[in-house]
Length: 118
Image (cartoon, rainbow, N blue to C red; front, side):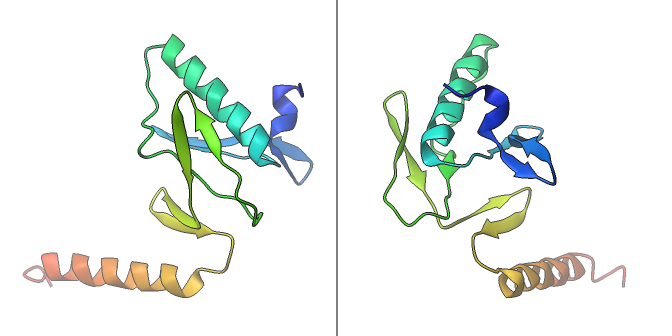
């Protein structure tokens, strides 16, 4: 088994294994099998401190076209083509137009809610 430090991806000479903000966690690996290993480790360590992973919200994304699956305990983790992390759509293809459209709608929504101020 590889050391935990080698489970991530190399970004500018640094191994990055995860992104964390509050209760949102994104795990980064080079393969689906390593992702499954990281997810299971996270699940076990979370339980040790009284936390529980929400299997319904847990997803995975890969740039490989194969039909890999990930299992945590008895649950199959859904493979998705895109997801939102901290409010931003993320996927393997360019989402610039979609992201700009989302931001424009959010701006108009905010404007509409505060129309009496303007």
